[in-house]
Length: 98
Image 1: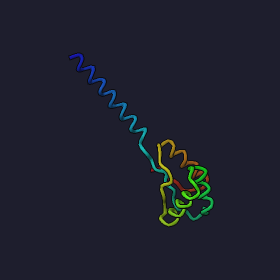
Image 2: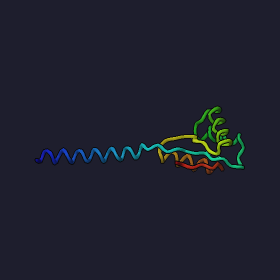
Image 3: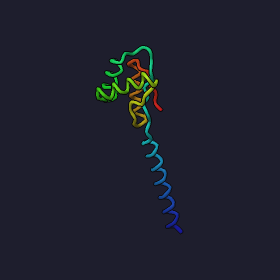
Image 4: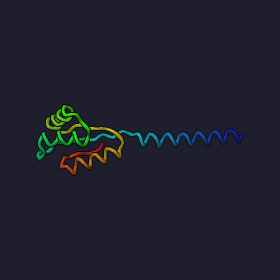
């Protein structure tokens, strides 16, 4: 009986550890929204500098935002996406994390 109690306790610990890891690994999306203020050049430059996009990728995102109203520009951990979102907002872009 003692052996079973030890195994059960270990199993619960492992499940809790897995839950914590899954929460940390939850992927969030950084969304850029259209606005009437920023130029294509500024959006493209900002995406390259902040999100590490290539010129082509940044240009494609800028056009998607312009024509569709929004575009996912990056994905990753919540902490990292919140950090990038604040930088984009500081540069005058409209961005959210979903």
